[in-house]
Amino acid sequence: MAESKKKEAGKGIPGKWIWKNLLIAVLIVALLVAGAMVLLNVFTQHGEEISVPDFSNMSVPEAEYAASQAGMRVEVTDSVFVGRMRKGAVYRQNPPAGSMVKNGRRIMLTINAVNAKKVTMPNLVGYSMRQAKAELLSRGLVLGKLIYVQDIATNNVLKQLHGNREAEPGTLIESESVIDLVVGLNSSDNVTFVPDVMGLKNLSAKDAVHGNSLNIKDMKFDKTVLDYDDSLNAVVYRQVPSPSDSLPVPMGDEVTLYLTIDHAKVPAKTK
Picture 1 (cartoon, rainbow, N blue to C red):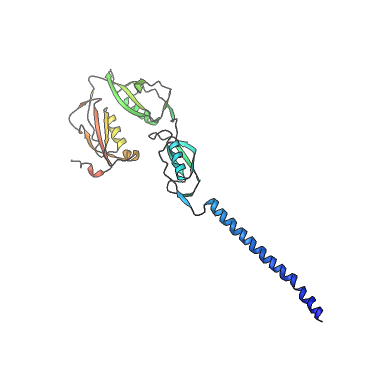
Picture 2: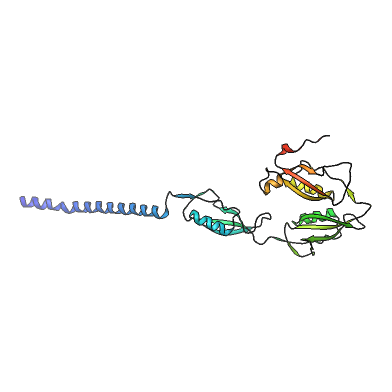
């Protein structure tokens, strides 16, 4: 009897070892998973994020240096052409400035094209000044100075100049280039009036001055104008000479405009 009891007791031992081994295996697997998670968090720096710097208007080398100092990298992926912006400067970035990213993140940059968009120079000779101005605008070019010379027809375009040189029709020229026009002036039709551009925005004011056969001598912006967008939205609060409904001035005379974002600076017009 005693011997049979020993045999029965011995039969339970292998079962206990199996459960014990399974338990040990589960613990080992759990430890391995936990260790892997710890290592993964270390390598990916989980929870450790840094703020993306503002690379706007930087050159690519400047952006690369700033990125390396911040623990990330940059890559130029696209380009656009923005006429008033420095060539090659960063125009846009993704992710945007201030975003929180992990160390080593790649920041994609869009830069202002080094080579400006080209347009075909039209032939403006023989056009009226108003027609020439409209044609320049449609081509993405800018009317510069009106240079008056004696001729039989007033405001008839005689030459077109770019950088003090004749701009040959059909040649490629950078968009937003300034084109000066040599126009005729008949001695019997050579005076105009200074328009009232008070309260008008930048472009509208320039258009009115040119429309009256006058030139812009200078555009002075006050401290409220901080960037290019502001300059476009700024309004005239002073002009020299002042508008006149009675005193004529020679065509080609110059007008200086003072502009601001603060509309309260614009004097109220008297009737």
